[in-house]
Image 1: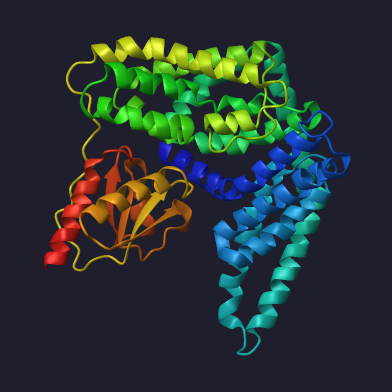
Image 2: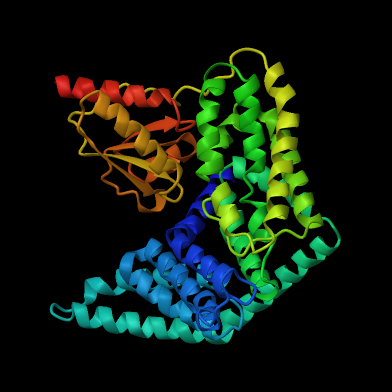
Length: 447
């Protein structure tokens, strides 16, 4: 079940994360130029609705189709998404997450069935017309059926969310969000549920609390601070660096292993999340758009004009409560709570030096990029020249030779690249896996 949720979260992230720059552009456009913005400008403000209603869903639809079947799938996915965009008067993000991958799957299925039977010389003709005809069919279906269904579902979800908020129960969502984050399914919740709800609410009210619920860096900050002050061994020594990357860099995955190594600390991040959400609700806090990554700088940038204090208050309270609960749990833990060793040390050595070492994570950003930077310095220190790159799991090539990833992704990496040597890490700072990689490369270089 957990693996399926992680896979779902990875797929959602693969649609949304590559387009985060567009979301930030829309958020800044809104923050600056709407009548209540920092620099009100009606000429530029007229761009707000077209971007959120048309551009962003089309980008997501294209990305979803591309994940399934490359550029060809992306084009058909974008055509299909245009149907739900035209058939609705709300931002159709959920519709894009349905129609984009559906478009990619339909054209992929068609190609597999028809391509072997196409006469020589007619391949391009069939490819172009099939994409156009299939895209047209999905466009019409999206406009008449899917758009209507998604609009109704979105309205029902929004009404339910508003009812929960009005009843003062919204903070209880931390009971779901915080454990889900630790299991690396935060992308499914944030990009699949909260962001679409937040965009609808922000369009109507100018801001939304839903953008704060998962992205809040406060609970993780409190937990990591407790480890920095009261932890032991590698957990204590690595936590200051993790604080910087988590709180200022917005890579929340940094604190997940610290919860997994001592499961009782989940109580701390839940308590921090509940407290922060309660402050957000009481202070009517909200953001203009999704802060991604969830850095304190992104939170500040996405705060509405004159409404930053409630956001900072919730983050601060969440960090304080999380630290208060985590401190006794961490300090009373017996033994040296160190980050786990690699899942299993491989016995075989690579026959030759790999051309590229790939860092792989759910979306190909954030933690994988950070790990790449750390290993690059270590390789330079060992005078080794190997190309480093990063990639989302969904785009991992079958020919990958050497892969470094969080241990929760190992089984799925093996499915996609069965011949790759996979190094499993629990966290991307001070991981012993990097030393193993260096040792293996030196042995290969020595012949």
